[in-house]
Length: 255
Image (cartoon, rainbow, N blue to C red; front, side, top):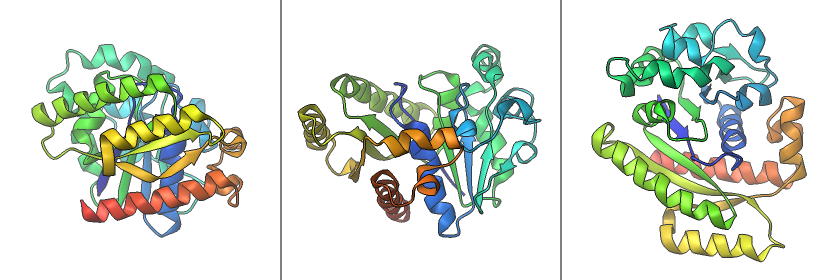
């Protein structure tokens, strides 16, 4: 079972969209995939058509109350695609984790209970470097970093990579950055092209070749409770995520 965290300290960069669409592509080729929603906003949960209020257990219960993860896992309309939903209570988990024993390793211990159940676990992290995100990075084998094609996003990226390096040094020596994916790319916008050039110059092969365009279809899909690949398979956004998933799977084999 491979665990991939999808993380960025900045919100609105496409973490959730990236996580659920990569998971959809993996499920389509027969991989059993679990998306673990660790964001208190629960966007991954909503994007898959689930109501957070009606789920008996959530990632909060797994992290704080020690509920066995499998009890919280929900099926979706997509074969092989499972989700462990979030809940608003997760926002308070940060305070509750602070005094816990070995607080950085709580999620790692819980996910060991799922060993052999899934091929991949994709963790949709909250948009901050709090103890929840640290738990995700300590539990993960690798990290995918979505990066919005805007100037200020570059500053946050450097800080995030440094933080990942610290977690690798102190808690998880096998953690790797699987790749950086450029999102919300607008080919009509010179700034998007400048950001892409800067990121590729600085991070080289770490940046995926596939770029995710700014797309109305990608934005619409969550309101229908579906990944864009299911909502509109032929759209440029869906096709971009299919290509990205191919790159992710190729790198996983190399890792």
